[in-house]
Image 1 (spheres, helix red, strand yellow):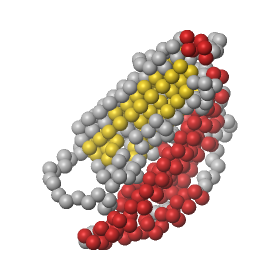
Image 2 (tube, rainbow, N blue to C red):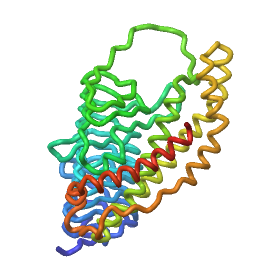
Image 3 (spheres, one colour):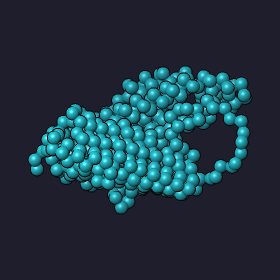
Image 4 (cartoon, rainbow, N blue to C red):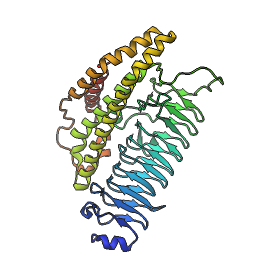
Length: 384
């Protein structure tokens, strides 16, 4: 199929920016009238469909094969093969949807990672989180409609990224799915184990670290009491969960660098992989910046706790974080990951990433999990 010129796209009602490289848009892509394609980093792979339900704006995004973005705004986001978003989407920088991950209509994502098959319903705001789990489109982790990940606190910080599943096991596509019931919410930073079910209509405010548990969130008791913004509690959990999240981002980065790179077939695949790595760097920078912000707020929190008779153990945690964060941040930058070979011979990219990973034997899976989990552990140990 012949590649269209920008003038031909314009005649078809599609606004192609002057900085867009048409060689990075596959010739068989379908882009409906009213769409805007912008940015020199934009890449749209074969078989993609854009704007089928409503106009879509694509700005410096990388799309693999057969991606469907049905309408909305998409900026500096990455979509692996078969990913899909319904109309009314608002998807911003740092977002990665891996193979066959999807969202229905009116879904907002930023700094969000859906690993393969993860599905979001409609009317959802789910920023600053990674979700994994499931083995196929028929066995997938699900976010019910009208769900919110609460990622901003009364203390005006966003050290709130939540981990649903994990990277060391999630990349092998063999874990139980996670289900978040609709009309509910999750207060970050939380950790949710594989197989967890959070009942519809409730807000989960705790970690669920045991697998295959049903959690029915309690209704908060109605009350009015004195409350001081800027005074932290449960700081150890907040710091630890943030570092575990950072460790998982570093593990996913290594997976991209050492495993996904083996499945690059062409320039479109390379663009998606490069875009994914760039977004992981954005996420890591964001998470560290958010801990910087919290560290700056600790002095006030400690002062208020001391004045008001706060728990001594909480005061000590906050003092320690103030004293040690600069060193922890320096040590984070120095953590390295050893090379790891999971394949006796290089895999054939034409066999497909999903199929190849799912056919790995248990011994190889365990080797890979141990490798990635060691990196996560190295990060968590910085706070132990």
